Image (cartoon, rainbow over all chains, first blue to last red; front, side, top):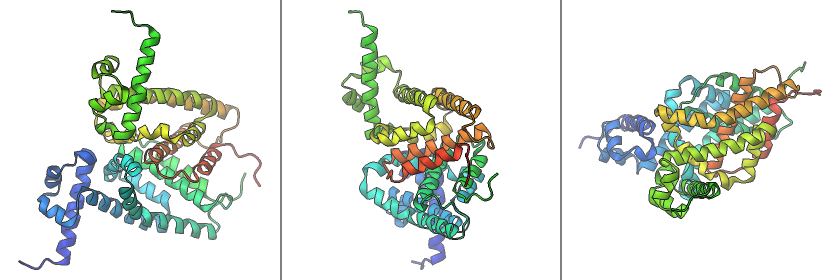
Length: 191
Length: 191
């Protein structure tokens, strides 16, 4: 057998994830059957599950990839910028409907909840660190504890995910995000 | 056949809705099979579907009941109070996970999306009217258009629904809602 290069492995992995993302977006978590995953990725089940343990594994890998990409933006530009990016390319986030479909499992399946939390920890950390830096720099309001500001941004983010997943109108959302951003900022000279 | 009284019909309808709410909360939309709906309501499929056309009909009726109750609170006390009520009795809103599960259908099924919008129109109207009254009374900030404030509150509400449905920690959420409320209010004397 030929030796499989690292590059090849990474390309294969990314081919599987792209296909799975599209498949979840179109059919939902339960609807993304193994046969549909094969069609969407152009690979056999053997190849897919050589790279990922099972459907949960695929799902969590997608969630982790998103979280890492978002963490990168959040670390430098904040969570509101992550949300603005979501608004700018909604179709990329249709798969997040899947994240909503699994809400019940998060509530009822402790093991799954733990795997999920691990995967979103980087994003949480990135957002928290950025908030702390902003606070030190005097750009963040200091009359509200940082963890409340974090909880607030998280809640808005959850709302945005729900909105994007259901494809509902994004009218006004850019102005809404301005309001969100303003409400965590230190207010300069008031009139 | 005995004549069925209005009261009896209403009681039966509400028995079905209570059972369906619990069934959706436990098994999700797809998992709430007809057999499980029978068990949860203690009624036969014949009885259930005498009152409601199909599972979608049941789902939309639950959504409408919630929306009307929320609209009532929203009209008098605002959407933030609706959210505070949700925080106070989370278990009542576990069924809302189902609302998330149907996000993909809202995006892809136009007819379903329309039925859904009709059912949430009362809540939207109630919130909008209250916002307009608050604005006239000078209690609402007037530097942001009312529809942006409405979009903002809606987005936070969507986030809260997602949070409650997944049973995730509600720590800080009360303080977060204080922040939300404050950010739509007219700021009085600033320091």
